[in-house]
Image: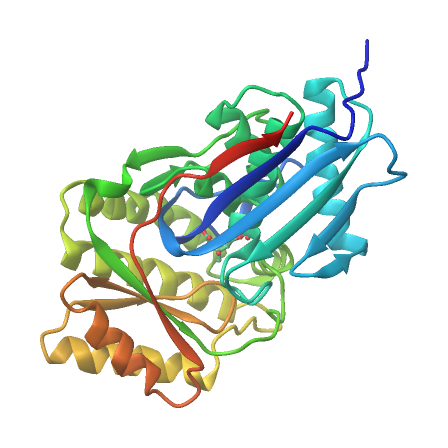
Length: 336
Ligand code: PMV
């Protein structure tokens, strides 16, 4: 196989937005290939993004990653190198890359930084290596690093199906564009630290020890259909109820693991209660929670500022970020 080198000129900058699963992914069908055991459906968020600048450079002795100004080594760097190796194989390229990435939100805190991060990395590395932009290829590459990242390649609302063990490719797909529906997501940030148990370890532990894991897998298909139908018919009550059910079922399943896996903190539950009270007063608001303590509230355009104001006043909430539905990931080649 011929390999080629690109000089230090090929530089690309990609921007990808975080996404929040409305039907949750939790559990792997194939750990080695990182294939999900359940379908997931997400909304891309305008307010939370990762911007990644990348260039392949013949003078480098190894791949280098700067994340929010800090040099990353160890496991964090290895995951990046693995994705870069796949792009190098596709492009038949044999030099290392310098990657500079920044998030507009706290990294590793459960605010889905891996989703926007690996989506931006896939787009930037493909473009810098001269690989034609094919969103299915980018989504599949991002999915191998972090399955939720596959969905961040697309704007609006996206779906990632469950995989079958051994399946070689599984990209996410868009189900409705950004302008399909102007709903809002309010993110209540309840801590600045990294999450206690990463999603891969959390899923492995849940699958191995939770008595509810099989039931979770069984129910997930129907919940994903409910969420998708609610999105397509712009039915906010149906979406909110299905999304809340998906998230709390995922947490119930994780909590039943042995020893228990508990991502919820006092501030998390205070937000869940605040949202319940708002709903009693006629506000359209439902919660979803990922593998961390933060609460994301699904709400309408009209209710969003009231929800954000209410959550900001909940004890333990550091910040309430209001987001619109976000765009697809984008990339620009800045020097060729
Ligand atoms: O793709 P990962 O490994 O970051 O896992 C994401 C898991 C959840 O955020 C809890 C759910 C989801 O579908 O995004």
